[in-house]
Amino acid sequence: MIPIKKAYGYVTRIKEGRTQVLVFRHPVIEAGIQIPKGTVKPKENTYNAVTREIEEETGLKNFEVENVIAEDYWENDDGTLHNRFFYKINVSNVPEEWDYEPTGGGDEEGLVFHYFWISSKDEVELIRGHGDYLNLIFI
Image 1 (cartoon, rainbow, N blue to C red):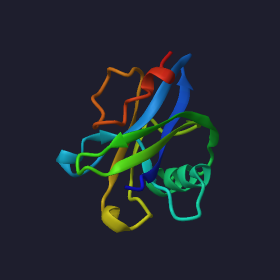
Image 2 (cartoon, helix red, strand yellow):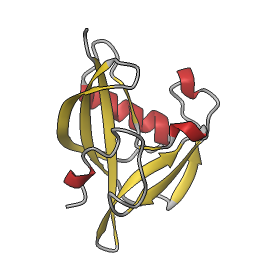
Image 3 (cartoon, rainbow, N blue to C red):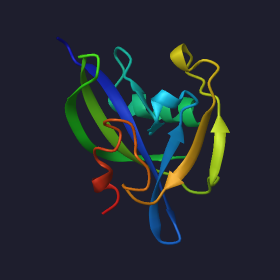
């Protein structure tokens, strides 16, 4: 089985000397709290994919993709294997929270995501797999 490449973005900011990570609540309750992420398109590298996904899912335009902080292989609930790339992304001058309708189409068409910030890896429970590397952000 060929793994599906996925790009994840830990969007971070510093507020009052503390690191915070951007998360969102999906309007479908079963989807839980997540970080921005998506599938890498054919012939697209993971850097370009995470940049595209952050813009499409959050509406943010002014951010810096710092680096890949982790890569792994992870089995999804449906049995598919994902090759996951987690990036650290820096932003400043962004709202405390906002709602955004993703522009990437597909399953997200017509949904509105609610974005907010967390200040520790234990503040909220992220859906399975999304918080796997928060320990590398909240040091």
